[in-house]
Image (cartoon, rainbow, N blue to C red):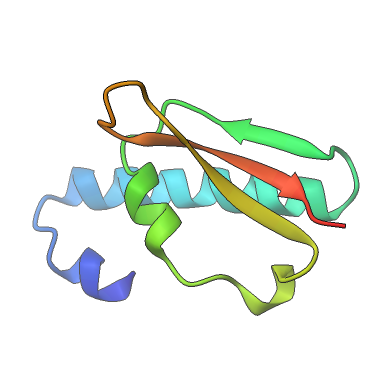
Length: 84
């Protein structure tokens, strides 16, 4: 993801990506804590890029991310699911 961030010139775009990463990471923490078995982070502009990032080793076997593609394949929302 770092390489993708460096290639983005607009500070507002970088800020948007960082914000969406924080939303997904918060949903992962929420599910890992057992507060919910599924959380959907919707309305993402950079869902495809977030799904492409490597998995965090701490989450393997505990949660999984699932892309919820839009009908026109213009992007995706992300479901965070308890895995196990």
